[in-house]
Image (cartoon, rainbow, N blue to C red; front, top):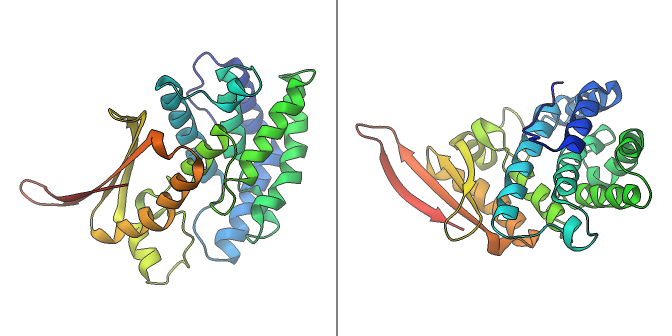
Length: 258
């Protein structure tokens, strides 16, 4: 699958993305993740499209945080560069759900050995000495902590967890629901029309979730709120939910702020 992102002048990130795109092993795991999640469990997408969306959102968030003065852990703890932080969030985003090939239950744990095998192929060509195990360990940490049950201990891991929850446009809910079943999970997922990540005024990151009816609030309250509260980045992110009714002109009913 094409895995081109806005890597700008980050040659390390470009090399990682080119590897992910060309790796038959990675692409097979992405495909198999969806065979399990969608084909067998009848849940929402956890395959290659989801991986790329999360990677894109992670890049957007980490760059806005850095622009707003929030230094990532790769810089503060290891004395490395911001480019390394970008690589960590993209690698973790790309591989966070591959544990579904074993089972959805404990998939964040099952993902670790697969991720180690993949990263062993590409990271030594980018990093040497102690930088290699540092980058490897921080990627694995972000993968393990992407679910809301385990609090992230780094800025990068918090970013990946939040980005995972933002893949909710047009029915792409991150709260898994049974395909074909009509309940609050499926109805709320279909309500979310667009997610926008942009620079905020009061805080570095503004997340705008546009919905067509109030059921979409369930997605924000049950998933996004928990992710942000557990991420360690709550004070740097502002979420606004907008519900619009089509008309002449369109009527904005109200805004919900987290």
